Image (cartoon, rainbow, N blue to C red; front, side):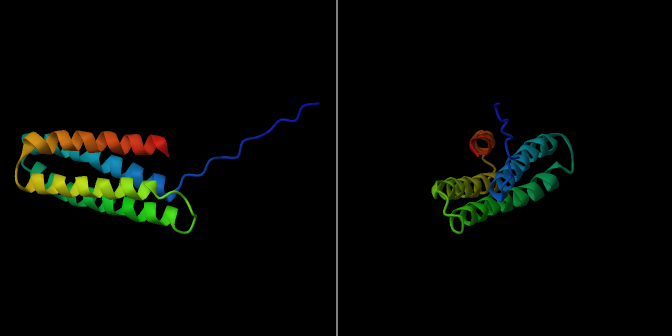
Length: 121
């Protein structure tokens, strides 16, 4: 008689939550960028969203370190998270300097990289 193996439910890690939050904040930034062009409150919303997105990038670094250090996991996610924090810093500087020709494509790249990191977890 064959035994039926049941798969254990997969847990969602803090690192996955941090990456998902980062992707969500970047997506919301794209929405607020559209509002920036069409409404009076768009600039305020986009500015506040930039702070939240930057905080999410910092949370991603913290989550990557926490996943690596106590659990003995790979250090590669720390490099990804740190690189993303650098991209987020560049994005903020470009936004403040009003350089949309680089700011917009970089935002799309960051969203794509966030989704890629989420899919890899």
